[in-house]
Structure formats: C-alpha cells, structure tokens
Figure 1: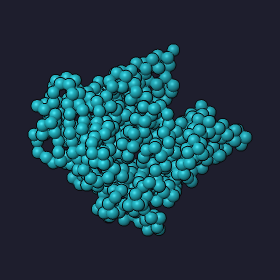
Figure 2: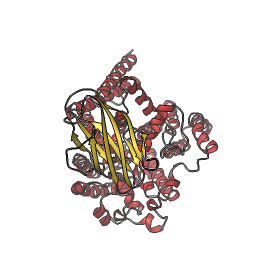
Figure 3: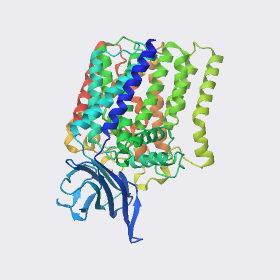
Length: 586
C-alpha cells in the first residue's frame, strides 16, 4: 500500500511539473513562417522557423519572419545571431536603434513595443556572417522573474516526483537528510538560473543538428538516414523522447519557436535526475573506513557544481540523458557488487541495453560490468556465464536492431557517423608529443579550450582532456580567470589524491573498490583509444566519459587516514566553491 501511495504522489508531482512547463514556454507571439532570400533564384523561399542555421558558410543572408502578436503588452524580444545584423525592418519601417547589431551568440534584447501591432507583423533581417555557420534565434521575453519561478517549480516538482518513486521502490535506503535537501535545492536554483540565461547554441555541442533530428522525428515519426543531417547518426531515444514532448506541448500551444525551450527543460529535468542518482551512488558506495554525512555532502557538491556537468542542463543534445543512464548502470553495478542481488544485475543489463540507444559510449560501463562478473568468485562459473549470456541477449534484442539498420543496411562506417565530414582544421595528428605533452604552466596560461584556435594548445590531448573536465570544449570570458585558475590548481592536487588512492584500492584483498577502479581505468583507456581512432580535437572532450566524475569523487575520499581525508575534503570544497563562483560569473 505504501508503494502505491508513493507512486500516486509521484504521478501528481509529475503532472504539476508538466503544467509548470506549459506556463514556462507560453509566448505572446508566434512565428507562422520564415522566408530566406535565395540569390540564385532572385526571390524568397520558405525556410525553417528559428532557431535555425541560416547558412553554413560566410556571407550575407536576408530572412523574413512573419510574427503573429497575440496580446498587447511590453513587447520585448531576445535575439541570438552570428555575426551581425546589418539591416533590420519591422513592417517596412527601419529599426530605430543603432545598426549593425553584433551578437556572437550573446543575447541582444530589443523593445519593439512601438513597432509591433496585434496580428501579423513582418520582420526583415539581413545577417552578415564572417566565418563558419550563421545562426538566428528569436524569443519572446516574458517577465524573467516569472520565467525563473516556473523553471524552479519544474525542477522542484520533478525532484519531488523522482523522490517519491525512489521511496516506492527503494524504501529508505537513499534517505535525504536536511543538509542534503538544502544542497539539492541550491543546485536546482543554480541550474534554473543557468538554463534561463543560456541559449542552446551557447556551450552546446551541435545543438542545431540535434534540433533538426528532433524536428524530423516530430514531423515524420520515422528514423532518418544516418547521413540525413549532422547528428542523425545518433541512436534515437533522446530525440524520440524530445519529439514526443514537443508533440504533446504543440497540442496545447502550436508554436515552433519555443520547441527548443521544451527540449532544454527536458535536459534540465534529466540533470536533476542525475543529482538524485549521484546521491544514491554515494549512499551505496562501500568505503574502507566509514564516511560521515559531511563527507557525503562534499562529494555531492563536487559533482553537482562541476561546470561541465552543469552545462548539460541547458544543452539540446544527448549528454544529459546519456549521463542519467550511465549513472543508473554505475549504481546498479556497485550495489550488485556489494550485495550479489540479481535484481541489481538485471537492472544493470536493462539500463545498459537502453543506454546503447542513447550513445554507444556506455560500452565502457558494460565492459566494466562483464569484467566484474568474471571477477565475482563467490558466484559459480556456470551461473556467471548464464548471467552474462542473458545480459548480452537482452542488449542484442533491445538495441541491436539499430546498429544492424545503420551498419548493415545503410552502410554507416563509423560509430561517430559524421566524423569523416569534420573539417581538416579540426584534426589532431596522432603523434607522441600530442599524446604525452602536459605543461601545467601553459594550461594556466590558456585556461580554456578551442576546437579551432591553436593558441589554446588544442592538439595536446592530456591538456585538453584536463581542461575539459571543468570547462568543456569551450572558450570563456577572460574576466573569469581567477576562479578558473583556482579550479585548475586544486584539480591537480585532487588528481594526485585520486591516483594515490586508486593504487591502494587495486591492491586491497577485499576488492571493495573494484567497480570504481575498473570504471576509471576503462574510461580513460577508452577515451585514449577513441582519440587515436578518431584523430580530431572534439574527440578529446571529457564529456564522452562524464560518468567517471562519480568514481573520481569516490577515489578521492577512499583513503582511510583522517588527515588525508580532511585534506581531500578541503580540496573538494575549494573546487566546489570556485565552480559556483565561475558559474555565477557566466
């Protein structure tokens, strides 16, 4: 009865979250159509509604947006574009402000109250793009306090829904203490603020390609070819779930300009799911010496404030859902290793099978699980073989069809289907120097990453991987230099603790920390192999093995000596504080 009650409560909270999402994405105008001027034809042709890539090449493009204003209020819009707007007319009249307007993916807020009228309005925008692709996005700016409140409510109701589900199926095994609840609340607020201020093309990996994939599924409800778009080689679960949400939302409010907000909210909710899974992993981990609630909260803060992890909460892409599945796999493994409960092994198998329909990278965790099964001497060899065969069969049945379609019928030749289309400028040669060079003073000098600029030492794999642990593959404002320096310096200290503790964990006769140690070893071996087989700068990003941050936190605290643990906690606190300052500065 108690389980039924908790499930019922969870469903109510989930419905409340959906209602809040409806209010969050409501708009005072819609875009009925978009036209792009095509010089070859000497006229305008129908084009996708923003957000959209206007062109993939440098040049000048003109688009017309047909806006239908639904209600009379202060009519503020937010524009994201790249690089500059050189001409802007509203209903045939010139924009009264100063031109050109230059954005470079920073939002430009305009008050058009004096220019827009109720009903249809035509906005003519000429964009000048100097390099790479040209992007345009237009958003109705509602009251930001109202938007923020609804986003926090979405996060809170979704969090309460998940908590109720956890109570229904796990009892009080993962009980949240008051201090932990306060941390969770603070992290929801932090992520809400970040999502509200961040466009999908800011600190996102190929957002427009993922949005194109979602739109295709929403419009056709069939799988596109792997080469149909830049990201359509991906397994379909993330994009199918996003398309389902967009379809459900469109039933109540048919406007395409806020589809990406719905998908962003989905990623935001998955990031909150990850917070709960991280806490469950912390509670389930077996340490050589017991750790107190204070240590657990420090561990949670270390993971939850990591900037590269927070970036996922606003991205249109597979990262957030992939991390959710990977943490589920990891949780299942560490609980199974400690308890030998078949329920958790089957949970590992199911989550692994589903994760392969999000991204192939989870094969690292699958390999870890199979290795652990071979090392589980307390289970008879015949039973181990049966369990392994059952898991493999489940994965083949649930996810094998996708890889058969892609590789056998469509002829896809690489796991990363667009790798052969990457520009030569993004290549990173497989030289010994590129794989072994780590100059920490140069890391402090460059701080961030760039796919295109050699100034950031983008070819040196160890340096790029280390910086991407904190900052992703992106270049950030130089004004945030000091929090970044603190992060990189304290991170190196923490890395020394992790390596030291992992060495002793592997020598431990009780094999307590084998799951965590194997995940770390196989993860870093996998990213090295991936970089070698796919010699490009984007292949060096820590986000491909983002789940490794949890076993890293475990290894940092694994030492049983009080002084070492105190030093580790102090370092993790410094990293968490610097991360929070860095994110607030963004």
